[in-house]
Amino acid sequence: MQVKKVKVGVIGCGTICRRTYMPNLMTKFNIIEVVGVADLIPERSAAMAEQWGVKQMSNEEIYNDPEIEVVCNLTYPESHFEVTRDALMHGKHVYCEKMMACDFEEATKLVNLAEEKGLMFTTAPDTFLGAWIQSARKYIDDGFIGTPIAIHAQHNCSYQPNTEQFDLGPDTFFFPLHRGGGLPFDWGGYYLHAMINFLGTINRVAGFGGTINPDRPYTHPAHPKYKENFHVDTPTSLFGALEFANGCHGTFQVTSDATISDIFEINGTDGTIILGNPNYFGGEMYLRRAGIEEPLDVANYVPPEPGSKPAQLGERAKIGTMKLPLLHGYYDSSRGVGLADMAYALRNNRRPRAHYDIGYHAIEVIHGIITSGETGQVYNMTTRCERPKPIRPSALAGRGQEITLDD
Image (tube, rainbow, N blue to C red; front, side, top):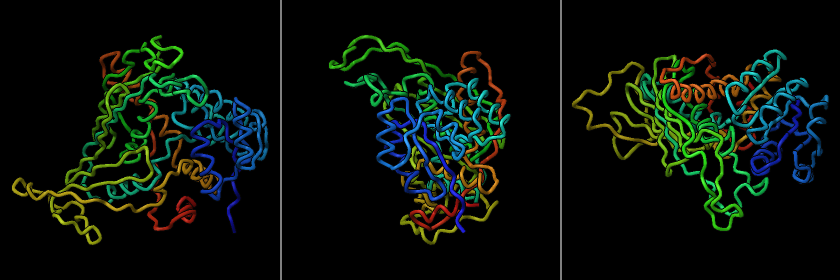
């Protein structure tokens, strides 16, 4: 007997909805039935509704439709709070794109409202439910690197108001340079969700953060505001140290004011896993530890017994690197898998893996690092989160892999 579908209303029909969410929600997940779509720009929701054969609706119509159980909030960051709040007030469960709000204060109000109403509230990014992060989680949990000791994350890029069409219309609105959309909130969320998935709650943070050059000029000669100043009202850089409750420590550095650079790895007593890019569901991982020799026999590799003796000083020259195979599904673009998991959580009366406490914890990490820089003191985290339940490995492909969410 098939599980009863969860009916969803989508609010926000911009780029991420058009390119990724709607194709996935309509074709990838059997548990989800999209009833209707809404957008502040009626032409966009009309086009989306026609393309996919669903209703064009207003926000209020979605909130008041008794059949719709979940609102999928795909609006730009500055609207996340209002749309989520209104949906919760109307008794709807909510899945919200990253991050849930523009700051920790707004996020706290939403969390309190969801708890007060007894509603399920989940947040993106949901890439941590994808193939490479779930596979890395299993390798870590199974002892491939021994006891985890440290984790390091760095993502740099260059976001500037330097294109010809920058912010001239809805389709060229560049949210990463607006309130709530800065790189710590945007890309930072992917790294933080992955870290929490691997290691759990963070106890304390310290560091520096803020907005470098808040007033910067439009630099494209064809832009109507060429050489005028654009005000960046969001943190663009974060440099932090993390102390996890399980004893691990970490570094977390993101900036949109430097050239491209990426580092993500987790170090243990017996080895290191060089991790993939958490913005993507599929990716490559490499294990570096003693006893690995080239050429590599990945198919017949056997991890060491838990508690086995680490390499001695004289053995360090024997340390090698091998590529780790993916053990899980959802290795292609699968945004919306967090919503699908939420739908199964509703039907099976269990906790969703993308539970709000992960996103709430992540946004406090950003808040805490910025506060630490302002006060010169270590910031003690006030939130706690439950490490999400892993997804079981599966060799199933296509829509068949959805069975791993029905637990």
